[in-house]
Image (cartoon, rainbow, N blue to C red; front, side, top):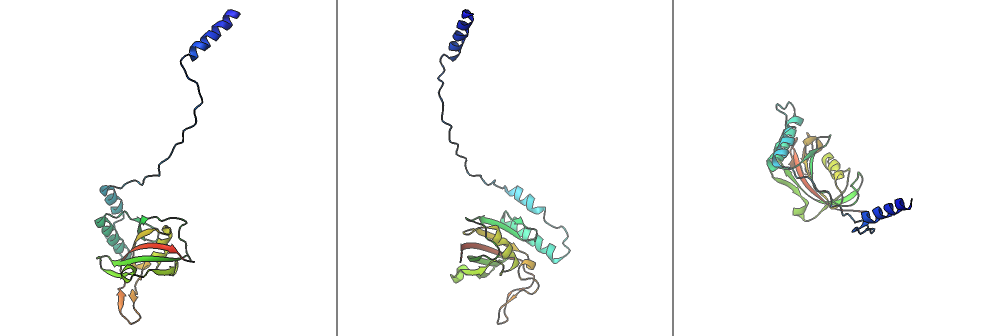
Length: 193
């Protein structure tokens, strides 16, 4: 029996020879932030082209084609909401998402689809302050997709902008004609209290 015990002890010692058994501290693994997948030009064009309507039958379908063709021409990685608003988040911002009823300050530039600027707070050097919910539907919806200090590009079909009436100044001048698709670049500067 002692021979058997000696054999086990010898095997045990031999099996542990040359190994340095010590406890290691668990390593701290730093996980890099998620990388936004880059979109190739071909993938972008393919994805956006799916929304093109071959034979548009109404104003909404024609405007959708105008927006998609513009986004393809500019290679903008736009997304579509259920309402028909197209947007591209240029900078998500920080903090809590903007919500309906928030009082915010923004800089913006509004353009027609041909690139002509029709309004710009930057040119006036005066940001605009307002409650989310008191603006055109495209803004009210789009601003809730970002956070303070964020930037968003909105491609707004006419029903979510100024619709069939357009935008007329108090003196009677037409600022935005009826049924115009509009493009806005909006930067949320801050929440106001």
